[in-house]
Every structure is written in C-alpha cells, then in structure tokens.
Image 1 (tube, rainbow, N blue to C red):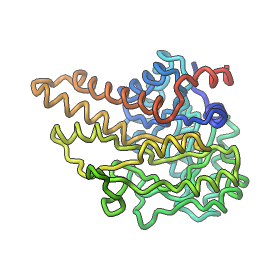
Image 2: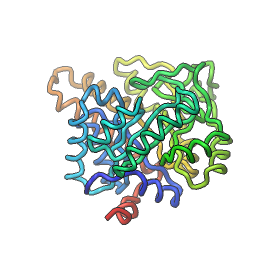
Image 3: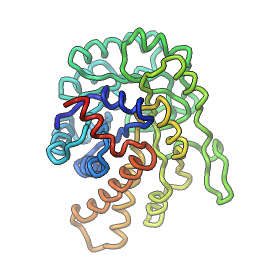
Image 4: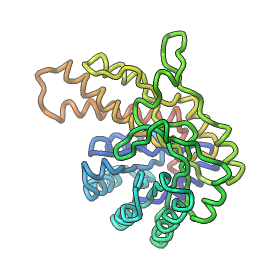
Length: 329
C-alpha cells in the first residue's frame, strides 16, 4: 500500500463522525507501535514529523521507516509535516515524498499568513500534496514550537472564511483551548476534583461550532490534544520520574470534538509518556539489563497500547481502513 494524502481520510471522517489520529514519529519503535496498532484495529492513520523529529532522525530515515511499515501493514497511511515553519521547509518535505504538509504561519499577521500559506498550497497542490494551515495560536512547548500563555490566542471565527477561500488550504488547525506539551495548564488555570486531581478548563466548543457554521464540511484539526494519561504519569513517577501536576485534555472532550467537524487530532506527548513509562519501569524491574532491545521493547508495547486505546475509545476510527482504501484503490 503506497502512502496516500489526507483528503480521502478527511472525507470519510467527516461523513462518519470520527477523527483520524495524527501521531508524531521519532524513531523505528514508535513507527512500529503506531502502525501495528492501526493495522490491528484496521484504522487509517497519519504519521507526522515535527522539526525536532527531522533534526533528530533526518528526513530520509523517517520516510524509509514509514515505507517499511507499509510493506508490513496494508492500511491507509499519510506522511505529514507537522508545523512547517516556512515555504522552504514545506517544499523540502514535499520533494522528499511527504503526502501532506502543515505550514504554520500563525505567528505572522493575518494577511502574511494568507500569502505564505497560498504559496505553499500552490506548490503542494501541483504535486498532489495536501496542505494544513493554522489560525490562532496554541500555548505550550513542543520541539521548536514555543508559545507563552500570554501570546496564545483563540481562532477568530470571522476570519476563517476569508482565509480558506483565499489560500485554498485543505484543512485548518484552530485554537480552542488545547495546548502543546505534557504541562498544558498551570494549577492556577485548573480546578481540583474530589480526589485532588487537576481538571483543566473546558475547550471552547462555542468557537468550534461557529467555525463549523461558517465553513460547513471543511476539515478542522486540533493540535496539542494529548490527554497526559494518568496511568503513564503514575508509572513514571513511581519509577524515579518527576512529573507533578502534568495535565492534558480530557478524553471526553476529544470524543466530542471527533464527532464534530474535527477530522484530525494530533497526539505527541502521550506517546512520549508511554514510551518513557515502559523504559523507566523496565530499568527498575531489571537493573542488570543493558540491551536497548530489552527496555525499548517495553516502551514500544506501551506506545502500541496507547494508540490502540486512542483509536478505539477516543477517535472512533477503528474498522474504517476499508472505506478509505476504497477511495484510493
């Protein structure tokens, strides 16, 4: 099965009221865990590479790892550039075989964002590559993306029609309260439930609903949507880690989003937490081990467990591979 774009995925997701998981990749084991989980549940999946991933693993390594996964698993997979900083970065990834790219010019003015995005769209569409852009800015830290809470801003619904119309973009990442990283909210921004667990503020579904009205049927994307699952945080902390007050987006809110116009939900920090939990747990249980294949195997197992959970219990994309494949074969 060759790599595909995201257009077919989003079409079926919009019709079926589910979302596609966009999982960040950094090495072989993470690629294996994600694609094995997707194949087991027969789910389409987006594998995305950030600036940090491309710096760490190099673009050709990532592309060939994904191609190897496709030799093993016959599922719909798109290879996506996450947070492309400029036209040159997007062009490089398009030329290198990526089937989807994100141009993130959200830190520029509205008109500059339109101009930069349109340039990427024109180059990408001529090569049958899909383009995602962003309006509004999410707070938090993820690789080269670092936006303070003071500089974060919600997407303005009144801007989306003009932006989509003038750029020709295929999907739009919006800011409605999600945030990058494992420490998405400070304790002061949250409340505590009866068990003393931090509860983050509700996502701005009112903004999402208004955007849906203005661009009906258009593919919406949520970044910074890891839930910082307590199970993995607990394992990390019980095995020498220090992750006090790590908090993410509640999964019930993500389920609600997946049933709306949101067709793509990005997950990165949860993968890192699962991998770290497995490795830390292994080292404490087996202090004599030094073979990376031993401890990374446990980390990979937790990542696969996490991805299976997200696909089946949050995204609702399990069993949907067949309908996407029918559009591309």
